[in-house]
Image (cartoon, rainbow, N blue to C red):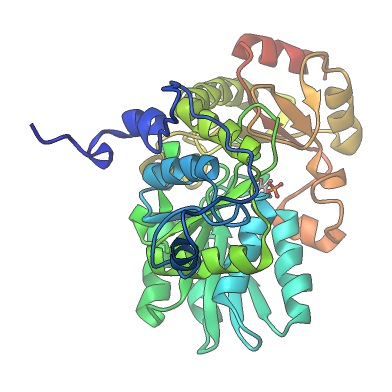
Length: 396
Ligand SMILES: *Cc1c(COP(=O)(O)O)cnc(C)c1O
């Protein structure tokens, strides 16, 4: 009987089986290969490996068996040909930009993206002659108008942080590729993970991850990844890693590979908990606005349901009473962790205005709707009733 290829199994099966590596001891869990270099049978084999004529390990800056377990598993879940793991989410972004862009090139990015990604584009890359135009995520005409004959990359996240706006991945990918099929459409899929949405299947070219968030899911390691086709990711991005080397350590890769095995269980449960919290907040009279794509009141609810299936694990809401009221709610929690991280088993609560978005100007925050009364909760795996009770809104 012909053995069924792992890629022909369903996602839940692939998440625990793809990339599995077994050493000479017959161990069931993947071994961690903590080695910087590898040895060869002969000078000729060594030369063949270095020139990529013969596949195999060379040096752990760009090839390591444990890192490959994670890369193959994530590539399978995102439906991509190739995956390259990086030391952090930001180095995944850097690797994509350094591979896709040269001096004089132009990028179009959504305005509301992760803070360090915004600074990477507007500050770091600007120093090297790459310019970026920032547009409103949901304004398709603005995306189209911003494209020029110098545009080489388009970048966005969906949903956005903290206001949970949704980008129509297929619509943006189509309009960009109609304009020029060579422009890379790059999506940061950190908030949804492949459990909820697979941007490559909707027309995007490249997916970025901060593995630090849901993929680890337990707040232990910093890491990132790039997923896409063989020629861009498997050659250009891998080439950047070989030259510049922001590599993932084998130990971290092992942690993330294990994280992928339980990713669907964790993400689905966190989404269900977040939906209960959003329902509670929505009916509370002290709450002025709830930003959660799973609520039918969300302006892009239909698109969110079609594209990501669930509302996600992050809920933002605005309380009457501005900063004082928001800080009072945050400070009286006993269970939630006051921190800006997300994607952890433990629920976190943060005040975007004075933390993640503190460096934005007052005007930009006002234009984006990030007010002093806004609170963001990244829901984890505690009992949702305990999360709701900990917020204690009745005392408002
Ligand atoms: C955290 C995060 C990043 C950066 O990832 P690091 O692993 O912290 O470098 C990028 N994008 C999003 C959406 C994030 O939440």
